[in-house]
Every structure is written in C-alpha cells, then in structure tokens.
Length: 299
Image (cartoon, rainbow, N blue to C red; front, side, top):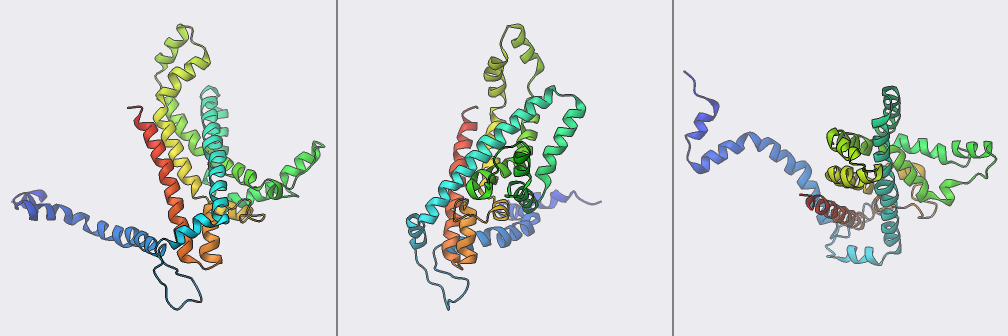
C-alpha cells in the first residue's frame, strides 16, 4: 500500500518540512533569479557607473553623477515634459475616455454593429507596435491619407509629423490602445445590476444623474485598474514613436524611452541611459501609487 504524496513531508519536523514544500518551486525560483532579478540588479549597478558601449577600457563607479547629469540636462527635462504630455493626451484622456464611450454606446447597439465595431477596434490593438507605427506614418505623412482627405474637402493640408509631432503620435497611441479600455469598461458596465438602473429611472433620475451617482461609483475600481495599466503601457511606448518620427523633428516628440535609447545605444552611454531608465521607472511608480490610493479609497 502506497502513502499519499504529502504524507512523507508532513511527517518531517518544521524546518525540513518547509524545505520539502519549497522544493517543487525551486526551479521556477532559480529561473526568476537568473533571468529577472539578475538583469534588474545589473541595470541598477550600471546606472551608477560610466559604462560605455565602445571606446572604453574599463568602467568606473560614479555614484549619483548620472542622475545629477540627467536633472541638469535640457534634453532630459524636455523628454519628461513630452512623456507626461503624451501620457495624459493619449492614455488618460484619449484611450480612457474613448474606450468608455465605445463601451457605453455598444451596450445599446445591435449585435451586427457591436461585432463590426469591436472587430475594427480590436484589430488595431492586436497589430504589432511597429506595424501600427508605419500605418499611422502613412496616414499623417505630407502625402498621406489625412492630407488627401483634407484636399478633397478643399481644406489646407498640413505636414502633421513636422508641425504637430507629439499630437500625431498621441493620436496613434489612442488609435492603437483604445480597444483595451473598451474591453475593460464593457465588462465593468455588464456587471452593474439592471434593477438598480431601472429603479433610478422609476425615481425620475436623469441619464446624467444615473451616470454620476450609479455608474461611476460602481465601476470606480475598473477605472483605476484601466488607468494604471494604460498609463504604464503608454510610458513604455517606443516602437510607435520611433517608426513615426524617431523623436523628431529635433527633439519635439522625444519621450523618455526614445531619449533613453538615443543616449544608451546611439551615443553609447549605457550608464547614463540606464539611469534615465530608472527615472522612468520612478515616474511609473508615482502614477501607480496614485491609482492604487484611488482604488483603496473605494473600499
């Protein structure tokens, strides 16, 4: 007669028993340390050195010099401002508002309309970032689709990627990422009990009052989750901007990921570029704390 798998470890004393329970997780733990914690720790180390990709015999520990250099660098400060502008325009305002509007409208639409709209919006989301970047580049290009439509309407054409580059890449990010917000809000709105809204309608509450006093409070946690995930994803957008403008013209669309790539790999300043990456991580952490506090206040 064979014993149960956990019977042998249960008969061991405290210390060996805990070690036996951890044993099945050991391979996964080792892999995480090797391929996740290890590279992160190495990046943190690089941020405190003057490591360069080429032309350097050995790297030296420079303490906080890379961080002091970043705060004194006009290019870094410009990248921080553009990153915040890009995040607010495309994620917090664009994707969040448009995703909610689409989710609310699709609840009242017929099934064919819901299927067609959902397919179009999700198609943009599943496209690889670099492919979406080239598509939007052809749309905003001086000889692209948008100007062709404007000329057909007898309106003046613009070189959008030159005159309003940060607005063009923000629109591109809205176009690509709205599907995620739409799916989140569709699920959240479906969870609102119908009898609650029907009772409010019987009491004479207008649509705006039902939205403010019923819908928003009941999906507040979904709003916080959606904002946090969208913001963190937008902060790391690189391929879309690189394909459309490469951060230009000049540095007028150079967000922090593009600035970091420029410093680390085009100018070979790996130590400085890694310090910028850590500061970008800090920006994401600040946004996350704000959203987590917003969700916690609901409980």
